[in-house]
Image 1: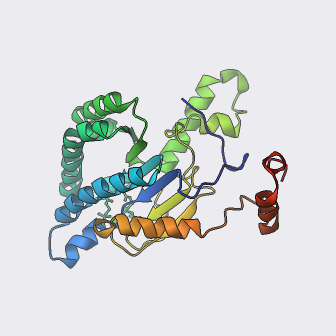
Image 2: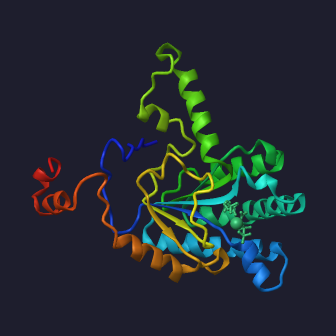
Length: 261
Ligand code: IPE
Ligand code: IPE
Ligand code: MG
């Protein structure tokens, strides 16, 4: 498994197509409400859009796509909606695992799965096992995930694994214990549905991601909407702390000098 460095220590290579896109898929409930439908209808339509966006990302050469499906705070919703979301998750795992595999996609699920129960834990383990060697794209679903949970469990793991260091661990060692240590940090963060907040998503990894907020509700977020987000990303200048002038010099310099700039 490759280990990725943090953007606060090294400057990642910037490509035209983001290597890693992380999305907060928000707005299912409002989409349904606008149509006088139950919230469940919005969530169902939301799953269809996941399919479309996964396909579009593979076609565009995105290497990692991470989707926030259920936050550690979403348990606060009415029991009926939570149970409906669990059912949808089960159905998606049952129906899609094979398809993902056929399309060469590796599936990973991050978050504390224990409260979801045995059925989901087993389906996830099976789908991850089936797709583990696929190389077209890594699709990560964040379920009962919270950025603070992730940081806390990473700190606990790093301290337990190196008792002799008595808590004096490095950024790299901590990052290596995060739930998504297998992926580079997101280049592009997208939130649909109009809110401009992180809602406890990837707190550590979004340190230098480009943010894109759109009023489009998740069930309307299609391949064209994804392309708009990527086009916006391509107009950004990712400086990682440097000045614009330094970037220009680095771009003009021959490759041997580029490392020095
Ligand atoms: C996002 O849509 C899906 C989940 C959080 C599971 P919402 O259900 O939050 O939709 P809105 O924000 O109420 O419109
Ligand atoms: C964030 O959406 C979580 C997911 C999309 C899974 P929410 O709708 O739960 O976020 P808040 O409550 O508006 O911040
Ligand atoms: Mg919401």
